[in-house]
Length: 393
Image (cartoon, rainbow, N blue to C red; front, side):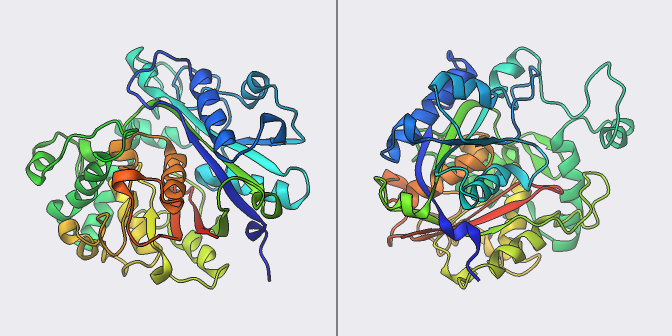
């Protein structure tokens, strides 16, 4: 069977300035990233006939999703045949999966997908993206958090991570390798927020947010935007870059889709998502050249290493020991641009931008050697998860 994602390819990627407080508006940053991606693909604005984003504009001051599709469509004067957003999807990659469906249905040929964040500026104005809002009656899942003072995602995820630590036996010195490796990679990425070297002593001396998570285990709120162009495969071959085929996706929901009633808090929704992705390709984990793995918290990256099959369940501690295997020159370079921990929280689209940059061989000082052709990438923790396998033709 030929699955629909194989009819689609990434043809261009773009990124705005990424900062801890921008002089530009969120819309300006989004326009910058979008125009960058369109130009990278060798396309014109008139070629773009679809837009998708996750989760769509949220209409509040948190900076989590500040730009609506209609705003970007108007700013770029695009004439669209199709558009889509929505938060109920397989993590942030829901926008890509929707675009794949639209292209296969003949609704679009070149889809602009963007993810914008304006959280750094919002937090300076005290509009933090808290799970629990002061002065509001808590409903739904948040009602389970409020009595236990779980007001932020780090507190929530620390509870899940504690279960993982108990089952895996991972030590802080091993856990630290994710953050240290990514800081090293960020030092070679001009778009990254934090580029100063980090030692194990630096990591161990950093503030503990909620055990076992330290501040360097948490992603960095930023102002910025990333964009990608997903095109029909026949149209992709006429674009500027070698097409990066979407070889396989994982988008299943086979667990209780609940942040508070997860059956397996130590793995979250990842295992069946990864299993689905591998079932849609003849490639195997050993074929992967680079891995751009979700790192809202370092815990998620450990999970994805195991659930993608790069190591056995609860074996990530040994796989990352000393950091050599996951380094740029290692057998599986991980989060080669610094990820969200040091590069900044662009959710999974910063990872896609970096993965494509690597596959096209233009990552400069941080370029992985050996002509990488296959990238595994993933998104999200909790009950929401998505995965993609990207292959450069």
